[in-house]
Amino acid sequence: MANDSNKFQAIISHCKEYGFIFPSSEIYDGLSAVYDYGQYGSELKKNIRDYWWKWMTQLHENIVGIDAAIFMHPTTWKASGHVDNFSDPMIDNKDSKKRYRVDHLIEAHAETLPKEEGEALLAKMDQFLAKEDFGGLKSFIEENKIKCSVSGTCNWTDVRQFNLMFSTEFGAVSGEGDDNMVYLRPETAQGIFVNFLNVQKTGRMKIPFGIAQVGKAFRNEIVARQFIFRMREFEQMEMQFFIRPGTQKQWYEYWKEERMKWHLSLGIPASRYRFHDHVKLAHYADAACDIEYDFPIGFKEVEGIHSRTDFDLRNHQEYSKKKMQYFDNETDEAGKPYGNYIPYVIETSIGLDRTVMMVLSEAYEEQDLSSPEKQDSRVVLKFPPKLSPVKLAILPLMKKDGLPEIARQLMDECKASFRCFYEEKDTIGKRYRRQDAIGTPFCVTIDHQSKEDGTVTIRHRDSMLQERISIRDVKELVEKSIQ
Ligand code: ATP
Image 1 (cartoon, protein in one colour):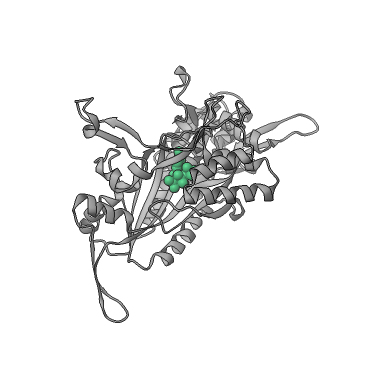
Image 2: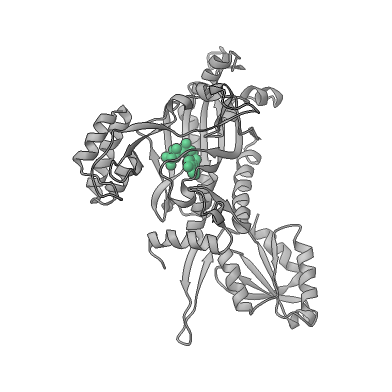
């Protein structure tokens, strides 16, 4: 088994070799922190997206989904605070000219220290960040002799803020200043906020209720070298839950627990997760935490849960001059009507690509299958069957004697219900290995006995056990496993 940093590299190579993820526009040497999903990666990503969507919208009766545009009126981003606040403190090394996000620079240094010392360093950094004391941060970096990994020197510029939004021009006319400039959305949440009343009124939604959305977001990340963990174009799965003011603590706890249930339902053990409470809160939040997963590169955020108060709706009301209020006709314990108010919001925000990375990290296994007679090994992706890109591989043992016909018939019976893969070439052993490498939970082999008694060999990916079952039972067996 590869060690953890090797494992990360091994996963990246595996993703490329088996059609999961390619660097974007690779023939032109790629584009930094932008990736394309291949034939199996796009299936895996879609299955995760669908699973999240179903769990959030279908299983929670008070949550509905929308699909808002990526382009939004530019004032949206003034109201949301992104124009003024969506920035990261950066520092440049004067010798190498390399630019770092300050928190990443200090975190990388902390990892080289003994545990307690590293933690103390991070706690101190959090204090500077919370106070936005950038002068203090620079001195802190110098005092701790934190060096640039390229030049090896401690020759730093001042710490500066860098806005992460991409902008572009809108319409046919260009070069007319800021008037026709739009941003590529840096989060999907604002598409939900601006549609809050549209959905509430047309859906006759009663508080508490949620609006979910999946879509692309764009951030001009400075340090972007962690494969699909940190991309410049990525996908978010977000849900805004609208509640009565004053109930935010209770709903925040509810969503922390509920989202963790979703993670555990992927079959990932609880020990691989932890909550990380934020010390420095974003400009819109009164409480926030991350769900962190133990990636091969260490525990890192995969999802954020934020108590966003009424910050967004209140600001949209102010900037748009349109009322963002909800009329609550219920009464409190004293019999007093709640009446009109701007709802508070709890947000759950998970990165789809980071979830793909998490699912891949959890599933990837290198196994030594050597026996005294021969050396052997395999790479297997132990995905939960519901997330596997291909559910069933149908493999006739030979290309003759009527075996392909039986296999094709099974293929026709199953392919409308779930993704199947048909293959006649190579030895059965090689075909099994290729399916292990893309995480196919079941392979079915059709042989001469199948012609006689209508049975096939079904092989289970994880145990590699094979059993003989009736060809008529194959479809149901696969369907049960992916429910
Ligand atoms: P980080 O601290 O890692 O930059 P964040 O706290 O800025 O993340 P949020 O704004 O809370 O992230 O976004 C919600 C989720 O979107 C994150 O938990 C993450 O899964 C995903 N996400 C954010 N930025 C990126 C990115 N550049 N590439 C891929 N996924 C991302």
